[in-house]
Image 1 (tube, rainbow, N blue to C red):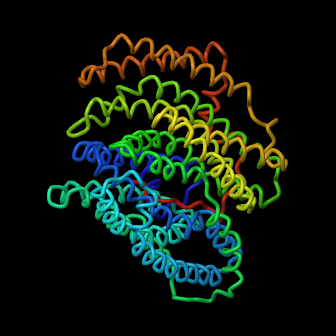
Image 2: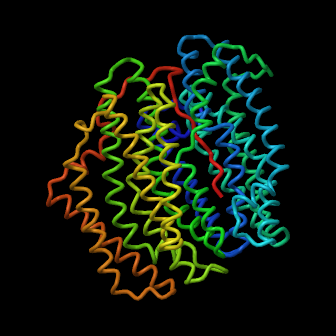
Image 3: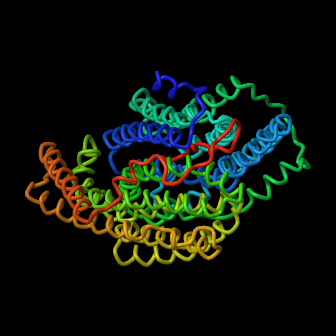
Amino acid sequence: MRLFRFLRPSHQHSAFSATLLLMTAITLSRVIGYLREAYIAFAFGAGQQTDAYVAAFTLPDWLNYIVAGGTASITFISIYTRFVAQKREADAQKTFSIIITVMTTVLIVGTVIAEIFTPQFARWMFPGFTHEQMNLCVSLTRILLPAQIFFYVGGVVSAVLLSNRLFLLPAFGPVIYNIFIVAGGVIAGHRMGIASLAYGALFGSVAGPFLINAIGAAKIGTGYRPSFDIKNPAFREWVRLSIPLMLGVSLVTADDWILRYFASSGVGDIARLNYAKRLFAVPIAILGQATGQASLPFFSRLFGERRFEEFAATVNASVYRITAASLLMTGLMMSVAVPLVDLVYRRGHFTFADSQSTAVYFFWFSLSLALWASQALYARAFYASGNTLTPMIASSIITLATIPLYALLFRTISVTGLAIASDLGIAANAMAIAFLLHLRGMVPFSGMNWKELLKAALVGALSGGLSYEVMRTVMVNGSRRADLLALALGSLTWAAAVAAGLWLLRSQLPADLRRKTAVSYPRVTEGQVQETMSAGTEP
């Protein structure tokens, strides 16, 4: 009975149940995402048309980021839920209608402009593409561009649901989106080629992020009336908070764009980097994304109530648990890179040589897992205080400063250098945001459990090294049997080494990870702040 209650769309969630639900939904979404990537690898491999398909998401992502940014998940939700908590339902509905009307209009205009100038953008962004690749990339980009309108509107509508602590429908929007991409390829792949995936993404953006949330919002009585009242005080507040997110460029988003720009000169390089990054995104999403989305409302509540010591302790405890778990996982991911990538992707047009190249990129991406997970929480600590400007300025400066690093490592170590540059860039980004929080006295470094983090790092490194040495007894040569045997040996060795290492060092991490909360979260009442689920437009 508790399970059915948990999965009801009308069920109002706590911090722990929201995190559990989001982890479940994101895990399911990543499983569907794996099927999507596996199908693409099988049907199209890692060649020129796959490079063009992945590259086609770049301009739509730019449009979504520049025009919309994180304005649904970070700024609109705080204003809307404040009105709901103050019993100002009419003001909440009016703000919702104004933002939907104005931003939909802006996005439609932006989409039309982007459709017109797609060829010029593609030639500038992907100078290494052949004439055929360029034409395909332009065609696919133009199919994908309108999806950003549905992503944005769906994101704002989902914020309304989450403001009422209704997580289920927003959580499963990305799952539906991924299903449509796979279905598009399976149903129309033979007739339309790789364009079938782009059409699947377009229809998926309507059915998943937009439609499912709109139905849920309608059921709780959310109304919409077109309004261009840009003088509305709440709308102006939303604009003030949103501008830094619209104008700033975070490396978290720009990393994919930079990788594609430099890798466009090699056949299949964009595709192989993308396969590695998408596989790497699975633990990031499960460890970092779900926790970050569920934590922001409670960070905001603590800061809003001026419980600053508890706020700092909550942020540090959340970062500690996620970082420590990531350090352990990194050892496993790096050690089993080759058999894992080969088992996941090699089929059809994706060869064992492609697996080996992709595994090298996955190996280096895995090194930064803890940094990707922790920076998401640190950024949300800033957002919880109502400060979007400081982290965006810092992230923008770091993004611009690291572009020469990408170029240098690409020239010296080729595509592998891009993966290493990505690690160094996200390290700078995470440390900068953490340092700024410390400098402002919001989340001091002294509150971090450094001793346990050091233990986790040591155990992760040793268990990963031991797993790799044991796995070397199996010759991974492209057979499924060898992949499975190597993966099983490596995983079992890693698990045993982690258990033994944590026990020998008397680590408190296992007990800390089992706790629902490290500190007491505030009681959440009807209509308090909640975080939205972002569907994203990943290829």
